[in-house]
Amino acid sequence: MRFFRRTTEQGLTAYLRLPGRIAFARVDRRVGVPKLLAVGMVPVKGDNWNEALSDLQNKGPVSLVLRPADYKLRVLDAPNVPADELKSAVRWQIQDMLDFHANDGTVDVLAVPHPEHLNHVRQIFAVAAKNSLIAEETAIATGAGLNLAIIDILETAQRNLAIRLETQGRALAVFSFIETGGLLTLSLDGELCMARTLGVTQALLEGDDMENALERLTLEIQRTLDHYDRQFGGIPVDRLMMLPIEQGDRLRNGLSGNLALPVEVMDLASALDTSAFPEVNQLPTPCLHAIGAALRMEDTRP
Image (cartoon, rainbow, N blue to C red; front, side, top):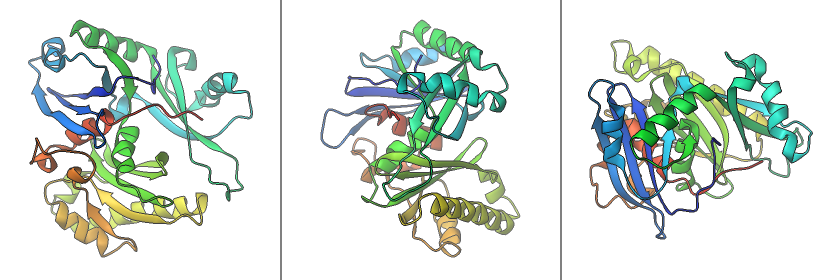
């Protein structure tokens, strides 16, 4: 299955399988401003995923967002090969980054923006996951009566939220907490241009040593912004937006005092029509990533 397969349907349901629960969202994209139709958490009894997923049945296509441990994402220099040979070239280029043989995995690519003033070689993102894992997820979805059309990842789900809030010609940084730490993405003109997993968890920031954790997080964000500047010099980062979390204002204030760019907490109502869910900003982060995945309009090709 292709990771970033195009879908012509306007409605899309996206979900993440988490320990003991499923985060999901459904978005209607037939209107000028996408509308949130459903969002929430579904509990799972034991390993009965089919029963829980059957609650998501809908006539439209469905997208599964993989967990971080389920895939590898890397930035590579784009191989100088014909388009129809690109994936084959990338497959062998990333072999030493994988803990499985490249022939046993599904590999896909998406373009990194390359503004005209840049003189370094074009780059691409390569994403890979085991075929056995994708087959297992497909079987689970099919058993629940779902039309699984897309396999997505957290980085592009977060990018889809950013697209709705970007300022043309400027990059937008978005930060959230995921199970492995902090996820920082930068997008430019609707495309993902950088993604980093930062080694500071939400638990560390809520612990007794918050000041040290905040200092470490600020340093890792600044290093990523510095790397962005080296890669995309001349295109400013407009602002850093945080996905809403409990005590998000406290974290925003801490980052604002140490970063030389505006820091805001994202209001989901500014990205899509959430009028049916006035408390959407209080939902757990996986639900927000499900919303981002459900905002996908089409795939991104090199």
